[in-house]
Image 1 (cartoon, one colour):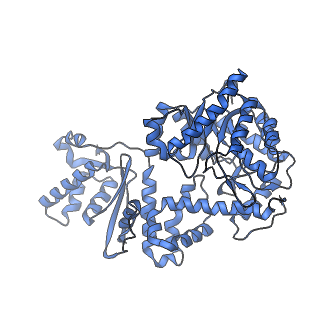
Image 2 (cartoon, chains in turn brown, green):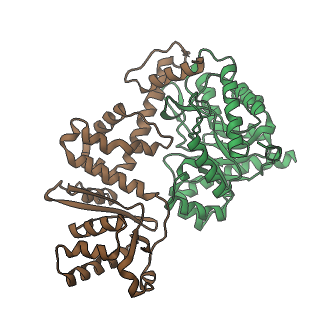
Image 3 (cartoon, chains in turn cyan, red):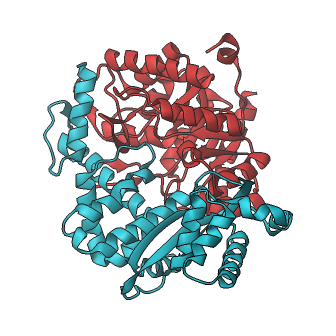
Length: 259
Length: 283
């Protein structure tokens, strides 16, 4: 190991250290001793990461309230940053809240983190084309049974019994902290980008079923069957037409192909 | 790097600003006297979405330069090839007038400190950085600019002054220099050296860009915050820099507590008022 490598590794440990270290490799002077100087870097590391995480997790900040600072400290201690982009340090926060104590006893926190992070990653996901109403109208009627709809590749879906989307909306609109609710039934959240604008909303069980099939590359006929299991054929077609209209209107589809 | 790239002359851009989200709309509607923009590379090294859409609009209106914070040119970890590929891809996309980063290391052992950690000013560090600058310049197909960082620590093993170290890297690696005037002032105070000796020690032909910024006085040391107006002592040092180096593209770099654009334009005009008479006189 070169002396430069050894020095940098020692400096790294000093910055990550919880207590002010004494390093013989550093020199102080009459303005400030070496420990005081080193503390500027130790302090700066924590402040920068805390600020970056707060930007990525506004919903979680609102939900956690005063315990948000402790939560971030715990996370920083357990997970030093490994990515050149400071924002990506947040990638592991939901998993940390899933497993770390005391946070795992409050599962709404991990779900909240999951929504915040989904919004963050969808924000700058690759640009994709958006299928419009005119594109749909141009599809010949005979092609529909074998048509495969292509949802935007950045679409994210997850299920939670908690009203996490209400917290995120309140954080974005700088509203008061809402009341945390746990529903008896699991709810499904859809996060996507309509051209440049990130959107999120809840969806019903049947929409989740159809969208999951569409993401898996199933044909339009198979999507109909998926709805038909629970409803009569006419009602299924009506519901599918409604979903399709909503998806196109909200930019959820990037295109289609004929299977 | 091929011969043509090595000898390419970079343009003088005049007086510019660091592009910040808070000014996106105002800058496009009424750019005022802003002649060019510096963008933070990492903010746009992303797959898609709104930031890149904005960047395309600015690219149509302004000459752009790319300024990175994460190259970690001084780290003893291997160069991050994924980072360099993404940086090169962004450069191909927006065709900046130049690409810059900092003379520092930002992490080691796969951990990123997200800080501009100073290097020891030793022959070993010099050799290490020169080799890496050459490899980065080969990867990007262009000369890069390295910026002096503000620092608070002094390594006991340092054998050179900071400016000797920076000058030697620029000469040996054949790269250019981005001089942050505020950073010189901050480090001069914190380490007790003469900022004018610093300016005198930098080879004028290598200086391609100036940064101007503000700072904060701590109890014992000056903290480089880049979040406040430029103080008189930094303006004075800027005048000395213009006297020594002549036409060097100058910009105001505000990283936090971003004020309304008008406030920065006042500072930019002040820089122009200080520099232009000196440049005319020299001509």
